Length: 347
Image 1 (cartoon, rainbow, N blue to C red):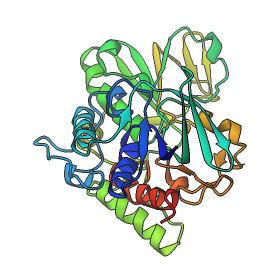
Image 2: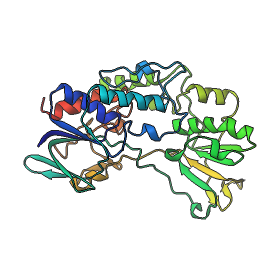
Image 3: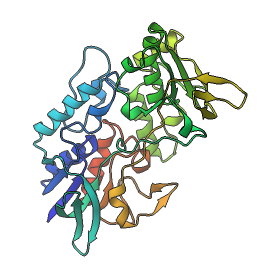
Image 4: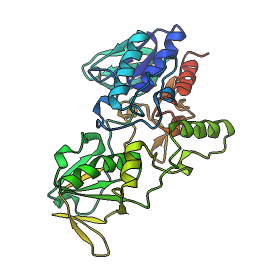
């Protein structure tokens, strides 16, 4: 029986692996992907981190600097690959976990889709959200003849040249993808319609991930409950700033329904549309834990930081602020990984 099994080999799983290695634990990291990098190999090429490399690192090893601004997705993948290799983390690839079950009194049984199983005294679930993109329901969507994708499937502006494209979402992915598309569509006689639930809430231009992490950390220490959302929704990374300042990012209220050829609003406005890109977020990938009967509030598993009070020995790492402030970020996950490992090992 292992001391700990970590499910997920992305940034959160690797951070847990670092602290488990330092503690001398007997552990294994099980990852569904065929290669390193977690979700990062699947993002669009122009995606940029909110912070420079010096402030985007996992515990123990700094991300190497870039010469062209904040790191892009490819840079992050190479960093995570090197991190895994540098620490010799025991990552087993191509393992899709379908169930975690109690194995009283000793711990847990972790079952894979191919029938393999592992036994462990504690389980750290770090599967992230990328595999569960969320698309809201919208009247008339079934009759829409155009193309629809979620931001998880966006790979760049080239397929959309000369087309009329709606980008839905007023947070970071919506702003970055709208900025990525704007110039390309303008040059190819296409058109961008950026739909948001309210006016875009840009953070001050000087604010990046360093300040967001500082605010999140201060909130945890003070117990004030005041988080980064009070600052705004959109970090103004250089591509977003350039598109905004050029007048290419003009938000319009969210449409109310689809019609076969496009979208329409309650005030009678109708637009012909070729494609819709949903930048509407993700949900935690926790299907493998359904058999444990975890308590939920507002759709989220009840957690105290990474600790799941319902199930001693089970920990959630990296899913968002509800299981640790800034835990879904490279720089923020380390403190919660340390806490989860200490609790998992009873130290």
